[in-house]
Length: 100
Image (cartoon, rainbow, N blue to C red; front, side, top):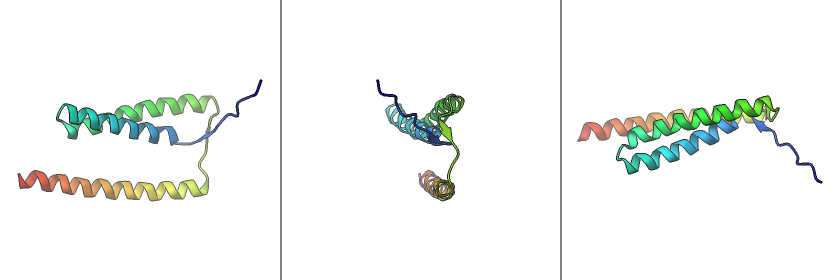
């Protein structure tokens, strides 16, 4: 029998994956129920909760490793881009609401 190589994930990996899955599910449900503005944040929070619980479980099993220097640098850049994207989206949303 072959032993499976235990894969270690970088810290935060599962949270990010599940946040995006939750956002997609929330977007689809928001479109279906005609409340996109509520669906996406609710999906994001559900995905974050699932990702956090999985990450805690994997950490207990020793499957989570700390970030490398390159990963930390990439994470900082991604956070800056995410904040900028959020602010642009917020400005566009407020602009659309004001033009109605």
